[in-house]
Structure formats: structure tokens, C-alpha cells
Length: 250
Image (cartoon, rainbow, N blue to C red; front, top):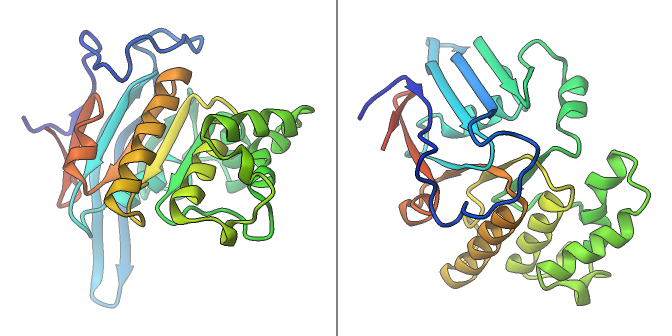
């Protein structure tokens, strides 16, 4: 089925979302939406259109995979939806707030404590310990009990014994588990995951994904997952395929 207006059917959630806690939103409420999102860049050979007036909607508690080949525009779309980039045209609403007209600082304030990120390259701060990396989202919102909450989160990902280690002292799988702990420690309404297993071997990647979906189910967070891995995408409630700057429901 092909469509430029992509929404969801919440009548039959998969087993990963069953039993998720209520985040104070109705099951059908949108935590993220985009209307007629377009992205164009100008170069020596003229204007290149990366995204063609896309519509997308992500509902509370659901997991949506966006798949596509390299160069298809999926990373660009993720950056725009997360407020890390701005569209050439169109409107993005994140947590019921229009973000396309906000400056970078205002978008960061909106995300703080409410949106989590997991990247392929882990993006841990090398000068901080695992515990200090996990504490960061809590400290940004003034959480007084940041250290204890971060320790509890490291315990959930099985790394309480590595709390005092810096990223370079950890394996790739351990670094991504710290990144998951950092992403989920503030109990976000929405998590963006960009190729979370891209730098991991198959066995380690499988363990990280099991952990990510377990935490997502426990907290009830919505997930937007960008991946080239069809098996991983099938873990989600919906799959959207990007091709030539357009989305198609799978």
C-alpha cells in the first residue's frame, strides 16, 4: 500500500507494546507528526529534493520503523522529526508543540527529559564515566536525585559494576547499553533510534535490541527507529519504507 499520508491503526498492537504503562496520553494521541515535510538543498548542479512533502504521525506508545537504502533520505527525515534539522517546507509537531519555527535552544528545551536518542556511534561523552553519562539528561532538567536514578538505570541494563568506567574502557555492546540507559533514564515519551545495532556484531546487536524493546515496553515510550535491518524493523508495530524521498507503508 502506498501513501503520502501515513497514520496508524491502534486496534491491534503487537506483543512488544502490550501492557505498557499509561504515560498520561490516550492510546491514539500523536506524540509526533509532520505535515508536508519537504527538504531541498542547493549545490553546484542545482537544487536537489531529498524529501517530497511527507506526512507522518507517530502515536503514544507505538514503535515505528523507517527503512530504506543508503541515500534514501531516512536520516534526513529522522533529524527533522527530532528537531535536529529544519525542513525547507512543512510543519513538525513534537509532543504537541510546533517546532519548525523554534530556534535550536528552544527545541533542545522541549526535548529535555522527554525525548531520548540512541545512535549507531553511541555518542557517549568520553571524559565522563558511564554513571555520569546516564546522569546527563536528569541533570539537564534539574533532577535532584540524578545519581541514584542513573545507578538504578545502569542496573537495569546490567552495567552497575561498570558505573565508574569511561566509554573507552567499555566494549561496543556495553557502550550501547549505557546509551540505552541514558536514553530511558528520564522515562521519555518518545525515543529516536538511528541504526542502534549498526556498529555491533550480530549476537551483541540482538541482545541490545531485546533490551531496548524490553525497556520500551516497561516505560511505554513511543519509538521511531531508522534501520536497514528488516528483521529489526519487523519488531515494530508499523514499518514505513523510504524511497526517492517518499514514504510508503509496508
